[in-house]
Image (cartoon, rainbow, N blue to C red):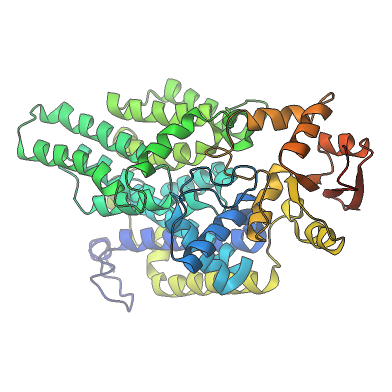
Amino acid sequence: MSEGQFIAGGVSSGLPSKLFVNPAQRVRILFGLVLCLALALWLSVGGQQLLHDPDTQWHIALGRDIWQLKSFPHVDTYSHSFAGTPWIAKEWLSQLILFGAYAVGGWTGVVLLGAGVLALVALLLYRRLSASLRPEIAAATVIAALALSSQAIIARPHMIALPLIILFVHHVWDAARAQKAPSFWLLGVMCLWANMHASFTFGFVVAFLSFLAFLNSEKSLTSRNSIRWIVFLGLCPVAAMAHPYGFDSIWSTISVAQSEALPFIQEWRAFSAPVDIAAEAVLLSLLAFLLIGRFRTDIFAALFLCLLLHLYLTHVRFIYLLFLLAPLVVVDDLARQFPAASFSTWSRKLGPSGFHGRLVHSFQASAVFILAASALLVLWAANSNDWGPRKEVLVTNALSAARAEGVTGNVLNHYDFGGGLILARVPTFIDGRADRLFQNGFMPEINASKKDGGGDILRKHLDQYTIGWTLLKVDDGRVDHLDRMSNWERIYQDEFAVVHRRKTPGPL
């Protein structure tokens, strides 16, 4: 076969020619399938990570109650300390999806749901990057982005919404770069995003920056595309308010930034070089690349990248936005300034010999093998792993022991045990909704009660909230305070949890 025939797509794959029109696209598809295989391998050894966060449990419980009660909460019914306080389930759709996976397959169902979403994120990102970059570079970039975002790869609403985030950012940014108006089907994406995760207001900012990038070249606010852009921007909040809580869904995402609890929640902490060593190394490497390689982009892409970096440096929970979205913004600039890495240059030079040529010749067999291997790995992982929340946040044994002892009254629990208590239908003292619910000095007081000299604050809480028993981690400072109180006794301890109960209704 001549090189001309090869490039024209003359290699028979036994599959519909309209799907695989040329060898370059076949190689591109194979590398996408390799990504699926890599994720299946990760699932078999690291799927437990998806359940590391205790908040997964209360998200599932909330989805369960919305499904069973056929209504949406407007006040808190899950804690005894703030019961009746206004509170909304603005991420209700993701919570329903998580509950559906749990109801069908237990914790294995939740892990498989998370792995499926992660695979979709990887393929969406790869599809866009590989349109501009060589397939192996695009695939390697996706793997690196997922690895750097690993601390955010947990079965929670932000992850369920990730495919929508990728779709929205990809298409509005590409529309601006192509000097076109975005398609109005993206308003449907915005609507789903708003019902799945609170980060949707970030989409408003992305759309506005994309519009400015478009306007920078268009130079006219009265052109047809400019008017379509303006209409699109105006309809984004309208689409987001197609939500059970209407405008409150938007307001709650803005007001959370003022929460007094954020400094006490680990995922809301600021970037710290001694802690976030890998991220620091990557950021410094990218800075060196920018300085040495003389990479250039336009001002609006630079603003977008600065926004992503600011969000991450301010709150490490946004690491996934930085590493998953930044490649979408600069991919075309990279392909243009480094032609050897571009898809167009590579595809023009692709011939029947060499590694890529052999991939094209074995396309059908390779695709079937990769798909079969991925499916077998997933099946093996689902059947050989006993997935579940990590023992450090499970309340099953401690709760069973407390019930066996006949404890009564309200519980004073550690923050990380709140999700498990909600799933077990036990009203909490505090739980993972602290960024929007437990206010008025509550979190600072809890933090102070754990320290030396915090016994008086703890006594106040025990009395004010009619506490009958406690469920705390073994290293919680309040355990020592309780051990020194004559009217309290330990009734259970394991490697992770300690349970105390009040002896009599008398003084503390």
